Length: 309
Image 1 (tube, rainbow, N blue to C red):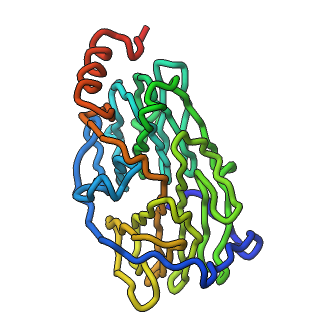
Image 2 (image 1 turned 180 degrees about the horizontal axis):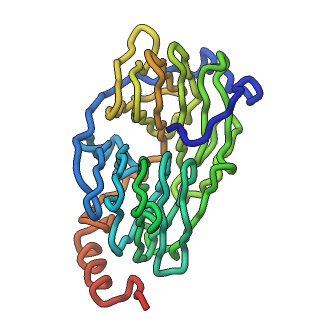
């Protein structure tokens, strides 16, 4: 980590400091992600654990996968499994993952790349390290984000997007101390490659020690900051909250977000337009009602979410 780097940040376009008419968002809460195991047993940090879904809306879940350095023969992934009713974004910082799904989507994702999968009406998929990585061992580190779909879009046809590292929009902070990678959405005219049904922004930023990053943020979006490594502070000057690796900050209302690095800092900034619909969530399905969940499980068992030939 980090995945995509630039030797000289001064050659990048600068993101202007938000003006006085763009008030900084205060920090509502800071929580620490608990550790768990996912898939066939790879370690994760549950970034959103303990946070009210109403504050996360339109996001449902985010896991930091690793960072883990596998010995030979130990790299793990996920078995075939179903999804319905939302989108998944898998962003890889280190290592290699191979994706396949029942609608023909798939490919190899490497450091700096993102796979964006719209489960929509239903899909089966698998994510696993390639055989050569299993044989050799090596470093693995990434994020998986679940983005809810509104009721009107839960039945859309599944879609797969392979977002290569060179498609990510790059910019820097005015002080040249922060590298900003826009993966989805828009930051001051810089457009990320991810095409999303739910309006949102996803940014990965690397801040040098002492650097400060202030980004304009749509006031109709929520705002979250998750720290992958390092220590820093978030929120308006004079009302900052300390934050460190494995912690999530939830911001309140405003038109800008501010992050300051006390050490080299790796953060993911997320924002999206809240859907404000009921959520019925069980395992791999995110629907609006319990009856829809029951139907999803029945459809999966009947093979209506896809078949493996």
